[in-house]
Amino acid sequence: MTSGPADRVARGPATGPLASLAQWVMLTAGWRRIAVAFVAGAVGALGMPPFGLFPALVVSLSLAVWLLDGAATGRRATRGAVAAAALIGWAWGFGYLTAGLWWLGSAFLVEADEFLWALPLGVLGLPAVLALFYAAGFAFARLLWPRSSLRIVALAVGIAACEWLRGHLFTGFPWNALGMALGQNLWLMQGASVVGLYGLTLLAVAIAAAPATLPVAETRLGRFAPSGLAALALVGLAAFGAARVPPAPSPPVAGVRLRLVQPNLNQDAKFRPENRQDILDRYLELSDRASGPDRTGIVDVTHVIWPESAFPFLIQRDPEALARIAAAFPPGRQLITGAARMETAAGEERPRFFNSILTIASGPSFGDIYDKVHLVPFGEYLPGPLDATLRALRIRQFVSIPGGFTAGDRARQRIMTVPGLPPVAATICYEAIFPGAIVPGATPTGPPPVPGLILNLTNDAWFGDTPGPRQHFAQARLRAVEEGLPLVRDANTGISAVVDAYGRITASLPLGVEGILDADLPARISGRTLYARLGDVPFALALAGALLWVLTARRRNA
Image (cartoon, one colour):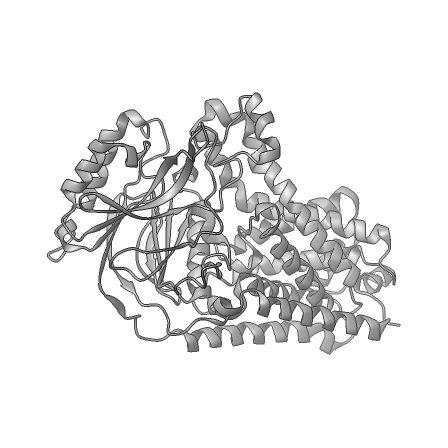
């Protein structure tokens, strides 16, 4: 029977600085172990956008492996060892999410007089709760923990499974899943067209954790083989991406000339209904601004796009504002805008409010409408079980809408029909971070039309000049690769951009800048990507294969 890494470390002194570090980490206990796990997780956040330091993830996950090695002494996965692994995982996840999501605190400062008290709940409370997923993932990895280099694969299985659960349970929140470490490089992100974000997560963890075997292994092959295989996997992924991305730019869709308006309106006291005139003036002036000899204003574009929640009033119920828009838009031009809208259903006394995308033609006449389906808990609504209690305590959601927003009907197709554009897969704000949820499935009336682009309207002004808006854009960009569709993203304060179906940014406006972005619409890829056809099935097969590999090796070495 072979011995485990921690058993071998305990038998004698380590040689070399890396081995000494591994030995020290494995033998930590108590609060020191928790502190090391927290710091390791925080370091791992540097591997995510906008920093993109993949070596930081290597350090983070190597430390995680050594910590689990220390919790894995002995032959059997005892209840105490699994509990220790869960605590390590929780501390690692708490550090990772706190370092990666601290910018959420900015939203609590927009109306500090009302929400400042809750800032610790957002900055520390949310990461503490979400870290439970990592606790489960690390505990599962410990149950699998083979006494060989395949423990790297066991950790990858545990984390990838818990990331999938984090993205689906309790409305889901897959923000900064570890696969984003590979999903921000043009060549490496192409793997998402096959296995999606969660498949990239499985690969990212296995690759980044492989160097953990370098300090100690039973054989020379066992010491260096994992890092060698990880390097080959990274090179292979890059080679696949380089071969997939064509050297020529994506051809434009004929007859489409887009203008994205980025007004850079702060989410402060100026964004109030009483300032409606100034706000609308700003939109109309930017929309008709000349940007070159062939773009003298609205007359030279086909579609003008305004961001999410463009107005602090109900545009559909404001005849004066609609009349001004009608006067500004020549015949044949389309306005696509985010806006709150209100409707009162038959038999209901209280109106319902929706976070929507509206299409407005000259006239004005309203065309197709999309209502946001995946609302932000506590941001746009209060979860049902807590709604009455919190409102009794005079606590409301961040968006100042009576009763909060109502989610759009999930059974309705997301595909919007906009004259002059291919079918549009519409998303609002953080809906774009959910892999596999961009294009709807079949409905009772049949499959929806195949979209020609992803439209994402958002308002990241809540989070200021922090990593948050940059992380948001990076995740939306990966959806373009997964689905093989161009992305048109208009953000209030940025980042607004047009991205082709391979993830190449063809035009963009940086964060915190007022301006307009004129661009053509890149064509979608021919056919559909494997991920667009099968969703997470390839990831599930890869996860099952990795799990079977570990179980087989564990049984062989038992």
